[in-house]
Length: 490
Ligand code: ADP
Image 1 (spheres, helix red, strand yellow):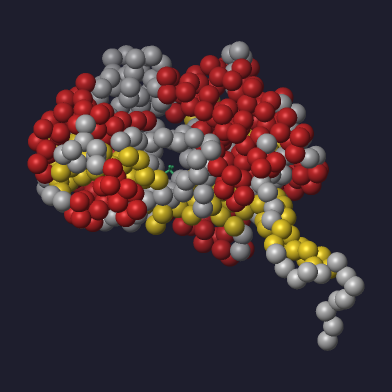
Image 2 (cartoon, rainbow, N blue to C red; image 1 turned 180 degrees about the vertical axis):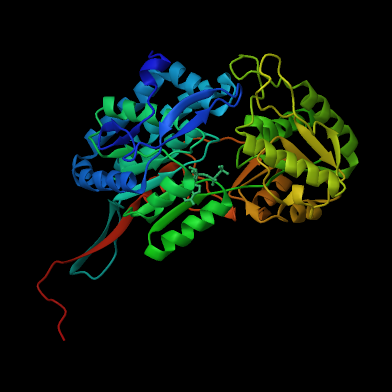
């Protein structure tokens, strides 16, 4: 196991070397649980981004031609190295993102699993032979897109590198990664590991920096595709700019997912699930179930259980093994949560619990927020429509299945939806009718490398996970071969 000192890097990773920004500029990344400065990190200029993309462009053909076996070995080795350095990576991620250490440990191991899954995916991406004229052969080829720009947010840094990088790399692309400015450190640590695993120079480059500078430069650079996860607003901007150059984009965006609890469900289990989905990672996840639709006949009993459970959650030092809720990412994020909670109260909703900062002894400068549950919410209120990205839940009662579906679909987003019921027919009806890319029945927020998913409506474009994601990092070519002896003639 490495310690933080050996995996800690704060410069750009371009063409296999760690380098300062060309103009020497930097930005700070803070520990949100303590308020301390964690590192001063290189801020990639437009010229640095251009250099990284050019390095990727030069390196890509040889990487593609290396063959599936060799690419597989490098990606498998990366997975092994992530596991080897898991503790140091988890500590670094927890300090940079304010997440509970126990969550970080699990997420680092999950990242290794994504690398393992995609390592040999090219071997499973079959082409087709298409029935055609008897004197012709028509078949398809799947070829890499070329250079992929990857832009990620701060909420799940390492898992998102796992979700995007190995799939793009495995099928023969080169990548330039722009991690979130709030959490750049594990991306640079990972760059060191891919190099140790034998990834040729230039195949993966990491350009740290702000979104509107380094990120925008990457979108406008000579990349062939952009794979983005982040807010819907920025996703729209990126899609518009990519549209100017007609390059492909995949977008994994915001959400306002419903948890729908029917009276026939196991109420304790449903309460645990409904609590988990809006509180995990302090509610800072796109698939958070932040709208609780509950059957009116059990509303008081169910909401009472939920409030008790929310108040029993341990908000605390992310490095304490028993902590369940860590710090909110930044002052900006805290202000956003407080603004939405204020709006909820102003518009007539009633906070049953929370609605304020939590204090953690010894971490007076830390950014902690209490799990918050609102009642008397109408579906058109701002807190029921917009993504807050904090541990804030809106409760909306319903009286029958039709009303539950109408409420579930009454938002612009369509990422995930959870239903809690013992009625199998209702579960399947709901799965068919809900407008969401992922449906959970009596469970929430599961994700594996081999299960494809993608947002509907304003939650995204394209698929992540599974063989579908690997295919999305390829271009399809169709080949016609004349077996002779005739050729088409005028
Ligand atoms: P969040 O609200 O989760 O911070 P953002 O969408 O603002 O989500 O950021 C997600 C990622 O997009 C980050 O890496 C950020 O730096 C980047 N980003 C922000 N604005 C832009 C932009 N205009 N062009 C490209 N990338 C951007």
